[in-house]
Amino acid sequence: MKAVQIHGYGDAGVLRYGDVPDPRPNDDDVLIRVIGSSVNPVDWKIRAGHMKDVISFTMPFTPGWDVSGIVVQIGKSVARFQVGDSVYSRPDIARAGTYAELIAVRESEVAIKPRTISHIEAGTLPLAGITAWQAIVTIGQVAAGQRVLVHAASGGVGSLAVQIAKAKGAFVIGTASTHNRDLVESLGVDEFIDYASQPFEEAAKDIDLVFDTIGGTTQDRSWATLSPGGMLVSITSTPSEETARKHGVQSAFLMIGPNVAALDELTALVELGKLRPIIGAEFALADIKSAHELSETGRARGKIAVYVAQP
Ligand SMILES: NC(=O)c1ccc[n+]([C@@H]2O[C@H](COP(=O)([O-])OP(=O)(O)OC[C@H]3O[C@@H](n4cnc5c(N)ncnc54)[C@H](OP(=O)(O)O)[C@@H]3O)[C@@H](O)[C@H]2O)c1
Picture 1 (tube, rainbow, N blue to C red):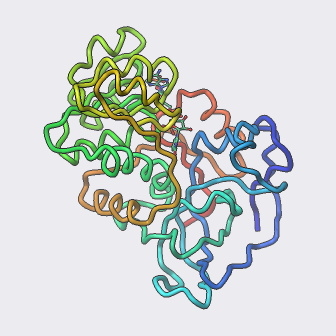
Picture 2 (picture 1 turned 180 degrees about the vertical axis):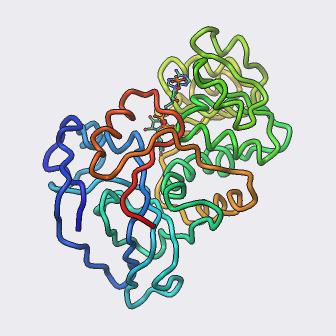
């Protein structure tokens, strides 16, 4: 099969498109013919070696941790799926990834894909969608009427977090720069803050939940926006418990993994018309280098979709 592998850490030039052996599914795996995948920032962080102290990979390895496609084979013990099912997944990061025509994924990491969107759209949802769901709902426990501040509301995770928080009835404030105002407003935010022209903490007050997708000074300056008893959830750096205590708020760091329960929740929202993936750019698998380079700018709009095959 065709796949993209890396043989050593480095810049986007280390991504090599070529022929590799087909995966051999274990008894508890489904073999998926990949149609859509996507690029997430973790892909290039791993490719560049930024995470080698956290996760070790045996070279060469196939990156990519988003897939939507069709089941073409099932292992002996697989009970929930049949050949021909349209499925999606954020598979185990420690196994061969989704920049490939075929991937073997544990049944326990696979969900039926939303019926109302294409494989290309669904292939952009799992990793960012699970992250947004867990931050806003599982950890943030957002309730109707609460005020939620979503940083990078125009990004892959933020664009989904805004819609999930709106679906839960929250009042949502989203940050991005001016050129993304229309996009963020189209997601349904109640207020837009152009972080480049105004300190966001001057505009956002009495927040119940801050979703920090940026870290650094953005996280530092977010504490002041929170109401007593509020919460800051970060996916970029562990917030200081001491600072949280000082502000009378809670904090959490989230690192996601495969999560079928969250995928099923996302599917329900998509099929109700309350959640749609925002695709800002699309690339063929053979052009994955350009997709990584776009993600590394930090300026991507919505998700970066990767076409692997025709439906
Ligand atoms: N812990 C986990 O499990 C987990 C899971 C998923 C993602 N992550 C991490 O979360 C981060 C966000 O992921 P992502 O996929 O959403 O990234 P992304 O799609 O690459 O984010 C790009 C967006 O960020 C916006 N942005 C950049 N700087 C900003 C700032 N200072 N304030 C507000 N918006 C800003 C940009 O808008 P403008 O061009 O308008 O600035 C752009 O639209 C990444 O670091 C990723 O690795 C962690």
